[in-house]
Image (cartoon, rainbow, N blue to C red; front, side, top):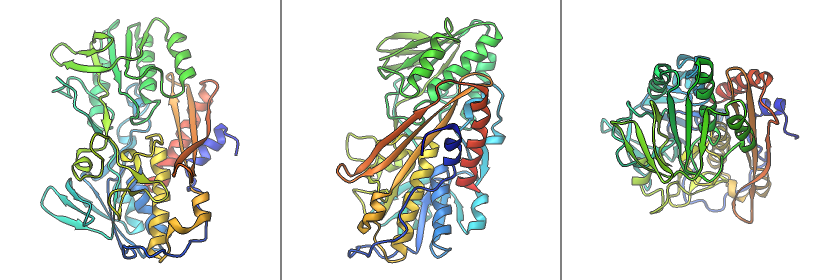
Length: 421
């Protein structure tokens, strides 16, 4: 399928391509799953919970655990900064999964026992499943001196942090400076930091001027490179200063300054995107090898390579695929398919047809101005030689425009509906 705007929109609701005929079990050591615990109610967790229930015909019980009653989408959240979206419009109640028979438990997971496939909640309750699926998103590495996330927000997990950054940008004086850091890859939403830089630059430009300093820990822009280079040097020339290879060293909260390998930079608003890794509770459970940041999994099932019966999907896994909402949705379907096959007495790893047809997709739209956007998509297929997902097709818009901007909302609506409703 050629990559076009329309195919990109349609892909938002499409299931991962999987073969229809399962293979026979090869003496699987775990019992056929009848009860599954899903931790995390974002795009990955909600999608996998929904599709396990759908594809099993309701025969596999699913409990979804999340500390909140709803999920606030990072998708489109940069538009909160310029007032084109509100946080209310990006908030999706987990109760929407109720009609599928998903049991919702509100609670903060404080410990994971991968050997018993159980989790402990902050109140002391323990939940155990035949399979445990972790869809817990990202965690942050430590940054010396970063002690006040209200004064220097990250706004990379949508919600209160987004509102804080929005209010700070609104309060920035005309001619003021906005400083943001970009962590070394991999991190959540590869084009996201550059998209945010463009939108803040657009706000300052419309207001009468200012500076946006992008301190990138990477040697080059990580996604839509040509698009963002044209934006930074073109419509935002004189506003955006892009600094590559700027490794973050420490933060001066009191003076709103960041110290990097490229120098010290101070701003009226500082938006710190720290190093990313799997959440601490996943690290503490031994699901991530020492010295690494992400949980290794088999991408045919997203089962941990370290603990059988534990699956990790979305941002926390280590397959090298982009960490995006669309990709999380896609991985969730591969995982759901595997769980349902196990529940029916089949081994998804033994089916050569399925193996040959496991694909995933990452797609997103990037607003560049108040009313124009670009897009990016990447298609992956399982490669038997490397036993990992291989990039097979990459596409992006050749220009940003208002048509893409309108399509962005249709794409997001499809993705939200497929994941949560």
